[in-house]
Image 1 (cartoon, helix red, strand yellow):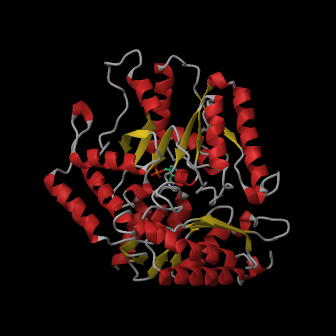
Image 2: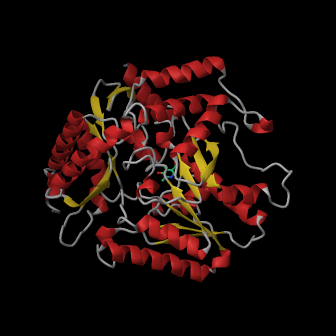
Image 3: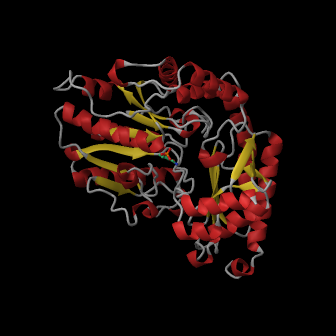
Amino acid sequence: MYSNHLIESDRNHLIHPVTAFRPHERRGATVLASGKGMYLRDIEGNELLDAFAGLWCVNVGYGHESIVEAAAAQMRRLPYATGYFHFANEPAIRLAERLVELSPPGLDRVFFTLGGSDAVDSAVRFIVNYYNATGRPAKKHFIALDKGYHGSSTTGSGLTGLPAFHRDFDVPLPWQHHIPAAYPYRSPVGSDPQAVIDRSVADLRAKVAELGAENVAAFFAEPVQGSAGVIVPPPGWLKAMRDTCTELDILFVADEVITGFGRTGPMFACETEGVSPDLMTMAKGLTSGYAPMGAVLMSDKVYSGIADGPRPELPIGHGFTYSGHPVSAAVGLEVLRLYTEGGILANAQERAPRFREGLLDLQDHPLVGNVRGVGLLGGIELVSDKAEKTRFDPALRLPERLTNAAYRNGIIFRAFGDGTIGLAPAISCGADDMDRLFARLRKTLNDVLDEPEVRREV
Ligand code: PMP
């Protein structure tokens, strides 16, 4: 009775993010009630292994008492402090300092947001301000990757290169442009790593030439394209793109909202390639989803450009009520402690080989066209014809079939619209959890393959 009432009330009142309204009303919600480690429980009492860390964010897993304590202590002491009018609070200052220590060299300044979308939005606004302040007001065009995801604000959804986020929302805006993704499995130049990198560099050069370098502000990229279906560019790609931006005199922004905080192995994916972006956006793993928070870090070049502009004494017209929220910052500090002193980052690196092996084992499954991953971030692209790399007919509604079968098998993962499965388990996961994850995943794939409508296509 209780759960029926909740589901009915959800149907009547709650608008869900990135969800079709009427189909949701017909289906009804799966109401999650509690979590421990990497397992969730819904209100029907079903246990679900969360192979997606919520929404690639609960990196430390559910139920850490020390985080609850940090939040409660801060709420008792000071639940809110504005950052306006020169006010500050201790957790925000300490968190900014810690992030600078943990980030690639050269990123010394931190602006806090509530999540990833407003981190991207803030990065864009600071870049616009930077070029106005440094006397190059024409540099206002932004380039990003096809299939990239940079959030759901008007600005970020336009930088995003996924048609589902453009449709009916009148974006991209005229100053937002896209170049092809570095997608080895489906690259027109084949999967040779150097060829894929060379192609991306050439695409960026061509787009900048078309727009005129004097008109281009920045290139935005995720080190691994998460929402695209976990597209992993070849090693060396990030560095090549960064160097090309430097050469072309455009800013390079790394969007580490998914890839940050141990997801790919090191604290940030940029580290793997020794890349220091001009700006870096982050969220999700910053607080492991225990409280909302994001950040944009910037280099001194950008910071000083804004600071020492033509109107240095006037306020910068950008900021949020909850920038540097003390409770979120206290949570962030404890989460960072768990990653480092708590050994969770080391655990992620220890689990990565088994994760990779689990992905590679799936390569021979009849539904699987391509597996890819880095650290504890994985993508499994399903196809109806392996040789031709044919995607399943959308009419088959493969993502829905996968999600339903997963639920029956006690696992949650992301089923993207094109039939790719995304995996991002808590980076704190144990060896047994990892084995269970792949067992439940394989069983789910077998169940979907056994559905007659699917079997007919393969
Ligand atoms: N950038 C990237 C790379 C993301 O993956 C996301 C969220 N999935 C965002 C930005 C937006 O973050 P949020 O949903 O916290 O606004």
